[in-house]
Image 1 (cartoon, helix red, strand yellow):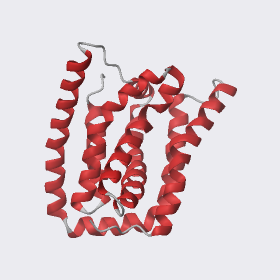
Image 2: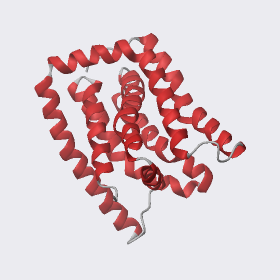
Image 3: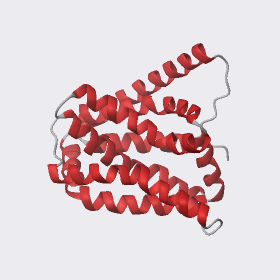
Amino acid sequence: MRQTMTRRAALALLIYLPIHTVLMPVAINWHAAAYPGVYTTLEYNVSYLVVSFAAVLIMGFGYLRREFDTLLDNKMPALITLIQGYFIYILLGYLMVTAILLLAGNITWSNPNDANIVGMAAGDTRKVLAMTVFLGPMIEETLFRGALFGTLRRHSRTAAYVVSIALFALLHVWQYAALGGPALLIYMLDYLPAGFVLAWCYERSGSVWTSIIFHMCVNFSAMSALPA
């Protein structure tokens, strides 16, 4: 695959990656604990993602524009990749669920991140849709696939997949594990199939927009399945 992200942009986005994934959530949790009731969970999350979206757009605008041109030049291969990726995602998800049931038996599986999204959606579904279907995929694909996977891919394909998938999964659950205990890290398993397919879509199509679109579709499908 051809990497269109400049080294300067990659460095800036890689520096911002821990800010987005660790420092900002820690600051938000500190503020929420120090000043309870000032903002709702939804308001904190909207502000957090809007700031990150602006930062990622500033640092990665040129990259995203070039990648969009690549997408337009390869529309049919990108579409085929999306269709293939969907079936791979379904298959991997089924295998993951089967493995969990075989290893752990008939356990109650309650992902705390999903529960948090359901709670926020009860307050304002449109804002949560904007966060999960637009802001989240744009930010995460630029950081995890464009900067992290793309940089590591120059040196090791295996490392690019393993590190980007693991950190992508950890992003979604580490705060719950920090508060509720390391046992909650088990819910990282929910994000491994998506992490693999998103990296695969990026690598195979040659455009990060393919993984952005796939990520948006997966999140929209999940949001559509939420209880009314």
